[in-house]
Image (cartoon, rainbow, N blue to C red; front, side):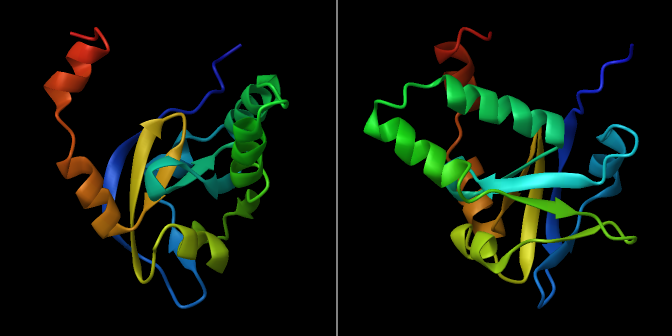
Length: 149
């Protein structure tokens, strides 16, 4: 049985967002999805972006959230912030998705977005916020801290 877990990689800058909140998901990301899947679940994510998961990836996120101790206030807040605000979005025939206005506002996205493939999800950023975030990265230092190199 082939692996049905999509792997998203790549960066797409200045993706137009129309007045209705629609944007085109790049074809490379759509092609990475398992056959017949035409949806993402989009949620508020870390560092000020939105995270878009295929249904299987989203199921793993929910399982991880469920495994956390509900006795901790921080856990409940995290679950509310991530799962409580998540929504399923479907592709139209042109590969566009409609991102709810509240999600665009959470991420500071107006008329343009930057989409980043980060293996198990697509992150949707305000271009300025993404640039600020990436400019702060010291790749060598992080890799050393994580014993990756």
